Amino acid sequence: MYKKVIIFILLALGMFTVRAGGAADKKRPNVVFIYASDLGKGLLSAYGQKHFTTPNMDALVRDGVSFGYAFGGSAPAYARASLLTGYRDCDKNKWRISRGGVYIKGDTTDIHEQEDFINGNSILLPENDLYLPQVFRKAGYVTAQTGMLGLGNTSTRRLMFLYGWDYFYGDLDYMRSQGFYPAFLFENERINMIEGNTRADGGRGYVHETENEVTFGDRWNMDGKKVYSPDLIIEKTLEFMREFKDMPFFLMYSAPLPGPPSVRAIHPEVAGNGELTQIEKEYASMVKLLDDHVGVILSELRSLGLEENTMVVLASDNGHDICYLQENRIERPFRNTKTGEVFDNSYSKYYSDRAGDVFNGNMGMAGLKRSNLNGGINIPLVFYRKGALKPRVCEDVVSGYDILPTMADLLGIKLETEKDGISILPALTKGRKLPKNRLVTVSSDDGPAIIVNDGWKLRFLNNRKKYELYNIRKDPEEKYDVILRFPDKAEELKARLTEQCNGNIENGIIY
Image 1: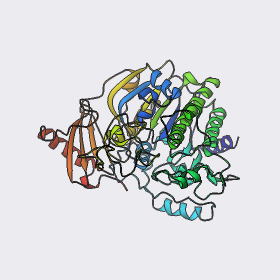
Image 2: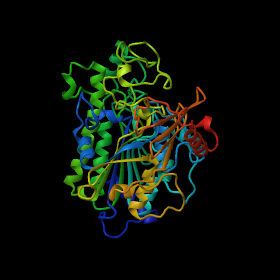
Image 3: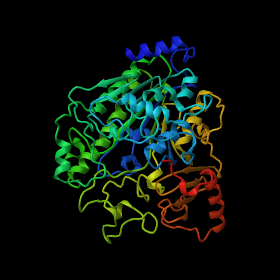
Image 4: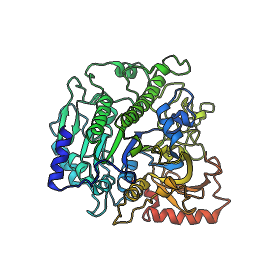
């Protein structure tokens, strides 16, 4: 009821209007956007995962329109900023990424001070240049985000409202959201203290530490870890759908899952799997929890009678990450387990079978999160709407920053400013092909990359000051650099990539 009161107050103030007709209609459905964290394509059994199943996400892939060449960011901060603005993440003029870890503490004594600093140092789009939730709000939708973040590494309550969210519940700090027992979470303007959660870091999981007795003992030491935040977040997600089932809504369930292992129990499906170590079972259980939550959301839509009138989108912010390091299994720095050679992502690229990654989360592609290789940026992207979208696989090159223009097209909202993304609605609803020269760009710790719909991909490596050229339709694993064979194509793409990065090719990342 609290959420409804806030929305009605906003309605009274004229901050947004709900179009006539009550619930969403056939042309403008509700939209539920399930945005996972670090969900590599290979973690879904629909894409080849062998050690556990993901039946609910698989059902979306089977019954929806899935994209084989969808690209997010190389890391969450890039991806989320790009998604919410509709601009490529090589453009540094549209936002400023604040540092993470600002709210990692057990109390709230200086939150206002921290928020004032972030607010004062943020870059906002001009008033007529819409963020994703503002597009929906302009169409008369109620907007909500549950889970983690708003844009970048750290956000504020004021910024969440300015981005266009009518309701928010969750965390506003990326690093803090990797702890699943936080002392507090944000709910609109309120700070909700969580009784029994007393650890300043929220029990933050071990992301880049090799498994040992200390890390294992700390994960399973439940002192100060009473309430599991994914339970709170999914319940708030369901509450929102129930409260606003009679109004058109846009809901982003921004899951902190899979994330680093932090489970209350090993999932029964993997508990007896002798091929997995303890920490691998814990990580698999995190993926299973995400899949369970997807199932809960789909079930709730059915029970509310909203399934046919709701478009469900499943995506990840970036490619696969390794959060289950273990000696003599998979270790940092990542290296070839047979030769001992450290991967440099150029002359020696990371591949799961060479690194010892039992899950093959990047689906056999080269690279991981933070890289501009396909394994770091190629994401699962699926659109599902019962009875309205014909199940199929679309092989066009698309990007996370295409979501905003696509939703504007779906809702009949004319954008007053030109975005970097384009509407892919014709590909979704009519099976139309995108132009062969359509391109997307992605920044990364390696450097920026440009991918063209005809299959050409040019990547730049900052550390070596070199370019590499691939045709990912013929060579999706990026094994063969053909830059010497196709110098004219390389020069063409160098010029286009430099333009996309505002002339600064060696600074293609936004930190």
